[in-house]
Length: 319
Image (tube, rainbow, N blue to C red):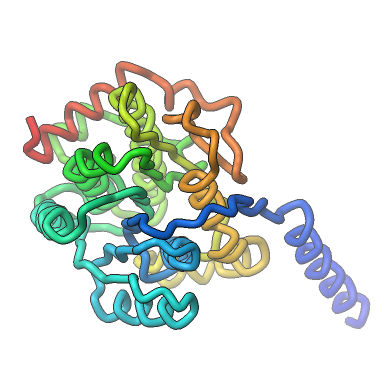
């Protein structure tokens, strides 16, 4: 028994050592100050989004927390103000599962804010169900709502340039695909609502994020706006909070032992938002605060990215 306990302690210690060395994520090295700049961060009341908003506020930016849950968002606003001393931290209601909410947010923002320097599309979820507009929840929130938000704010981004759009994707995109026939007929990325089927839809939605960024960069050529997608790492977040309890319990030990914290997860988002001299990498996919030199060809398919863009426009009523 003593030997088993000793072996267990050594195993746990070894895993923590790996977290401190091999699994340790690089940090954003930018010393940029953001006084006079305005940033919008979606899903900023918790996790990576909250940490990102905290860092931007600490640098002096006016930060808009674009969130669905008013209570949690207002608590996050007060925490960020207290931590940073920056009084220009504001909550604005945004539910990405409602295209009308996205339009209302954009309208309110454009009326109240004269500039937009950073748009960080951070919000994402893994959940069953449909959006207010009848789209699959994962597709509607993780891609379509962010697509519409970006389109509605694009002119303000251009007028405020140089400005950036940062789309938080995931390495999960590698397991994703876009079935346009199913998407067109069912407004959904795939069939089923089991835990594994929801995870597959999440992978598909992350491929949509990468493809959207790639296509957006092409369409922004000649403007003063650049865009980037990224993998934040294996991070402890609330993204799987809608999973079944047994599934969460099954993966809890893996998350506890191997996942990094939200502060680590925000670093590549901050790198893409702040690092000088990466404008020529617009449209690229980043991980560990660096552009990935080799990326799955399906994430750079011109026909697929264009078709996704055009279908997203149709779904949002923009064409």
